[in-house]
Length: 383
Ligand code: PLP
Image (cartoon, rainbow, N blue to C red):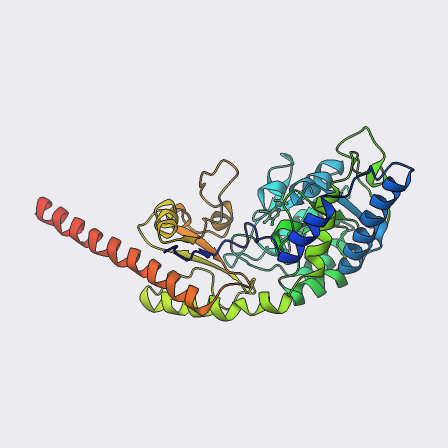
């Protein structure tokens, strides 16, 4: 009998939506370079531009403000490297923002994970040249949502540009998304694979005004000279299909399951769920701390149970690093190294929550009894 598995790593990537699969299959038959003048080229161009228009409308920008990229990593790099002035980066940013400019001023976080606005204002006051502020909408590791309106106001007051990495709220957090559209950051980065689209496609949106950045690459006029190279047609059409298939309500309802899980686990270990329920955060995300158990052990334990979770800080090498986000929130390294991220999705069921809880508590009890035995042995030896 094949065992059913549970995917609880949606913040890393979401499964391809069935409609997207269908679109991609159909698009495989398309050929013709969108820059070619002939009919085949024009047909591909028309599909790309229709997708661009749809994605632009979704973000509330006009189509010419959408630059397709290979994902949010490239979009973030494009804004940060293309901007030649000073940059201010929040300490909790994704590495594709945090690690781009070595000269960045780092803006600290409060213990809640929310960016310290007083510190941001102090940095802005001391930055005479127009800076680019990079503060994400919601953190991929903790789910903490940033106060977009306050950030927008500060940026406006100090004439700073703002790059908002909106990868984790797109399609998932309708209220924050509405706020984002209202406050209109200067740059917005997006990624398709977080919402059921293919990986390897994303966009940098520049809602107002002409781009104020230099292109990362030269050698072609595509994407209005912002991103040369033949367009990723499959990716773009898949991205468009993912947006059309979005079911925001289902993402919001993941909160019920997330809260159930946190409650059950907190009843077992009061301090396990480390981001307080009162903090504004993504509906689907929780960070759980199991004292004394390295997160790698926890992930492998879950894996053996057919449950797929991650440490918030898994990087491309597959290794787990100590979370810079939890560190920036003031957690000691021990907590960061013993914490895992569980990110639920529209397909998560109550039964899945039961299984995740059972698996977590089994490891918890096992390690507790091992620790007690070791402790008693040590006490005997030192007595
Ligand atoms: N920004 C955030 C907040 C993310 O969660 C991710 C993906 O993990 C990225 C950027 C990078 O996106 P991509 O995989 O499209 O390069």
